[in-house]
Amino acid sequence: MSNLIVRKLEPEIIEALKQRAARNGRSAEMEHRAILREVLLVLKKRSLAEILAAMPNVGTDADFERIQGKQQVADVFA
Image (cartoon, helix red, strand yellow):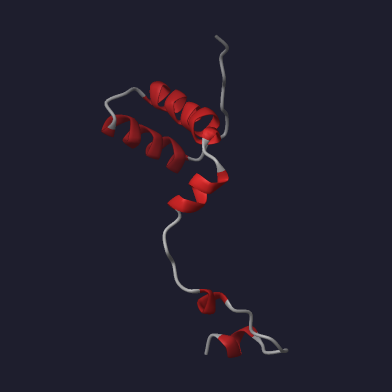
């Protein structure tokens, strides 16, 4: 097996990793390996159809219609 060193991580990332590891009863190093495995190997195997089906319903098509014309952003959200 190879080693991987990750440098210059923000303190918030380190703290989140430690908290997640504690919740899962693992060391931070074990949790780091699990995250990498999940993201790079497990999630990769999902098809586009599976990913789309897992997305939550966030509205209707009308909610995402484009506003035509030269309105300013402030006018659109006013």
